[in-house]
Each structure stands twice: as structure tokens, then as C-alpha cells.
Length: 482
Image (tube, helix red, strand yellow):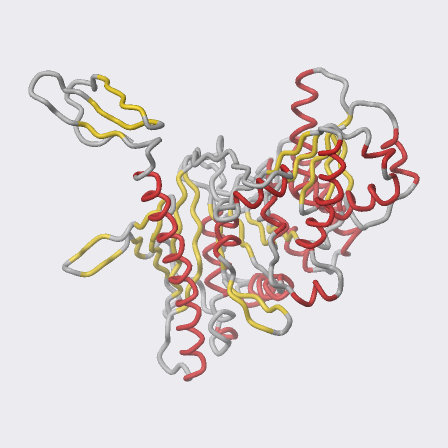
């Protein structure tokens, strides 16, 4: 048996579908199943004690329950454990969850300690995966292997370009887009002695009037900007292809959904909206779409925010989404039936979906009644979801930033300044981290080559693992090779 541990139900569903597709293609007899939910175990899970070859995808909580109820009978079958999003073991500073014994990092660490000890004693294999473990990689490798000073296997390869920038929400209902980073490196250039970034003026028309939001706080008053920009970005391109957009929020998804409904059903009711959604016409897609609508109506009723937005082509996805509906919604996104998604971290933590653009309306959250800024690791994990191989060559992540408006109170001006500072602080951290990585790479003896052009021999000298290496370079090539 192989156990594949994941932090969320959404990721469990996706991994199950992906592995099942591979297994079916290979034509081998392997059971692929996912278990998630609470920490209970029941009769329906009894097949786990059988001897069939099995790939089991489960959340941390479910794995904990399996160990508690089945113990050695279950663990003796395990030959490999894969821990996805292994960086989740790092403490998230949520003391309230820790006091209430609901801390997921602590749960993963305890689970890992029990599970890994059993595996190491029986010479089983462990594989820990993370795309955002920079700074934690050595500690994670030692934890997963049970051997101190273990070094991880790392790669910097990325198949799509990653653009990070800001969507400036102007007081006159207009927009500007500025790109600050490309693959973690600064895009700033000097213009007339001043630093500037590549920008797009008026990327789409101003949003229609929304006077009810004008006197709100700095982040709430840009929600009309957010919805209008998302609909524009999700509209078909010149070739008629839909472009998937994720609006990722850390908390209070209900507030965003309620504001979107007020805009669509009341404030902009008579406005001609961007054509970001058309009901499917292909039989297979019609079937999926109808199942989604029926399932959403059953779970949330037709009066719910989730159902009303789904009817309009906007998928709402959050942690309380039932498993069947969550799988159907993910299928809707994968099949490009609906291309505009409003979601919490349930779709930004490890789930690989074809989002070309991610819109981030806020970089803060409340924890223990204390305002906190999204950390660099969480931000990197989020922006890493933009751009997927096979769907495009580039992913864009845009943080919405408000601008000061005439007549703003001192409180709103301070809010605007604080929001903007959060963003630029994160950009500075990412840029500096990339610089340090490049500097470390360029000074590494394993990756350093110096090209010395002599009149006739054109010898290339380098130091690899302490040994002098000589080789003839390509004709006409100059500079350093790294």
C-alpha cells in the first residue's frame, strides 16, 4: 500500500483523479481511493485491511484515525508514504488552534512522528514534497528521513513564466496594471533617473458606477473593481478561448460572495456585462454542469449564494464544500465549463488547476482577533498556482491595490497606505530572496565556469568538485557559463 498524505479535501480529490487516470492507462490492477473528512473510522473503510494493491490518498486527520483504529494491521501493509505540501508542518503562529488541539502543523508533526518511526523501523520509504520549502528544506529532509543532516533533492525548473504585479484600482473607476516580478526577479527599469515597472494603462473599460461601496473601507470599496476585472480577464480571447481566473481570499468568502450578488442582481442589473460565461453545449459538459447545479441546490438550496453565483458562471469553493460537490466543481474548472472561481485556500494549497490569472484582493487576515499579513511562504504558494503546463506559457498573479481618493478620511488614507506597504514589503522579500539564491548559485564551486579567451587555444577553465576541468568552448561564445 502507498499512502499519499494531503492537507485538504480538494487536493485529495484532484490527486485521486490524476493517479486513477494514470493507473487506468497502464492497465494494472491497483485500487486508487481517497479518504477524507473527520477523525472517525467506520465499517465502510473496512476494505483497508484487505491485501489488494492500493494507493490511498487521505488528509492528515483521516490518516491519524486510520492509525488509531487499525494500528499495526494497517501500517504493516504500507510500503511508501508520500507527504504532499510537507512545509505545512511548520508552525503557523495560530496559538488559538494550538490551545484547542486543532493545530494542523502540530497534527502533521505528531502524525509524521508516529508514522515515520514505524516505517523507518521496517525500512519503508518516505517521500516529502514541497514547492515552497525554501529555508526549511534541510529540516524537512531530516524530519522525513529520520537522519540528521540529510540533504534534499532540489530543482529550480518551472515550465511556465510567473509574473507578479498589482492591479491599481483608481478612484475614477479605471484600472492600471503594473508588473513587478518575473520568476522572482525584479522588472524595474530606470526611466529619467526614476525606477519604474512595465505597465498597462486602461487594460479594460472602467467599471460601472457602484455608489454603495464608495464610503467603505479601503479594501471593501474596491470589490466592484475586483468583480469587473475578474469578468474582463475571464472573457474569451481573440481566438474564442476562455481564460480561467481565480479570486483567492484568505477569509470571509461569504462577504465577497454577497457583494458580488448585490452588484450582479441589483447595482449592475441593467448593465451589459462581459461575456465571461456561456452555458455548455457539448453533451458531456452539459451533464457535468447539470450535476453541479443539482448538487449545489441539494446541499445549499437554490436561495444560497453558492447556487445563485454558480447559475451566473461563478464557482464558489470553500472548506465547507461537501466532497461530491467539490469534485464536480473541480471538474467544471478542468473542463473549462466555468472560468471564474472565488475560493479560499482550499484551491490554492497544492491543487493544480488551469488558472491563467490569480487575483488577490487582500494580503491580510485576522487570527485570534489580531490582524496579520500573509507570509512570504503562503504568498509564494498562492502565486505558484498561476500558469499550468499544457494550458499556457505564462501565469499572472495580481494583487489589488486601492488608491487615495479626494475627500478620504484620515482613517481610510492610513488603510490605503497600509495595504500598499504590505504588497511592496512582500515584493521586496521575494526579490531579495531571489538575489540571494542567484548569488549562492553563482559562487557555488559546482556550478561555476570561467571563460578565458586566449589567442589560439580558447581554453575554458572551471572548478568542479575541486578538480580542474579544461574544455574547448563553442566558437564565438563569450562570457560566463553557469
